[in-house]
Length: 263
Image 1 (tube, one colour):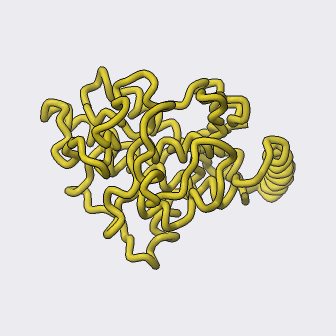
Image 2: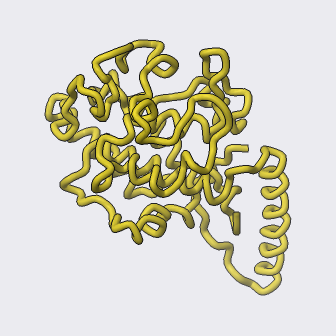
Image 3: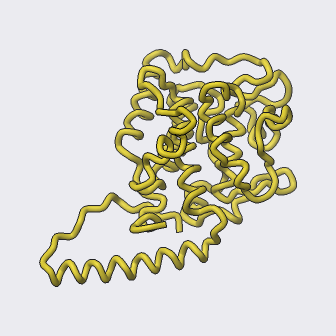
């Protein structure tokens, strides 16, 4: 990571992204909380991953017992158990999360969440999610893995607000320099973003989740908490030297967004 990347690490959500997510929430509440673009069915391959079998997203054990349908069918590289793997956050996987082009219905909401949970440090052991490997500041705020997508796809404030807030908290951890990673990394695959008119809360949150996964893959994957703490201290020393130099030269202190570190 460079500059203030981990000092903001997990830094502020871009105002436009937060506004889009919030405005989408408000628009759908005005429509009665019904996501017209996310029709729910019970067929295998449906974005919610009901599959007609097993517990539903409203069930308290859905995180642990919900079917990973696309994993079962060989469409997705993912396992609940173990450490996160690069294959689980490859560009081809991200395109499935985005449901871009031919990748529609290749990654359910539960599968998106499961990838995020593993990368944040939650571990599935003996049928339960634990937080022993989570980033410290994240674990303090979310001791149990939150739903970042809104798996019930019911967008009333009472039901959806926790998912909306969790997704916003995740986005706030992306430093400014990594805000456009999604387009930069996936442009060669033909992905140029979504039209505002086509966005639903589900699509918005999937895109924001992919952007975080890219940041994680490029800056955090494979590093221990100790590694990240050492990097943060090195940046602090460097920034302090730059500050003293600016003061000697009479320069102004540059503005930086609010810091929301994970360590």
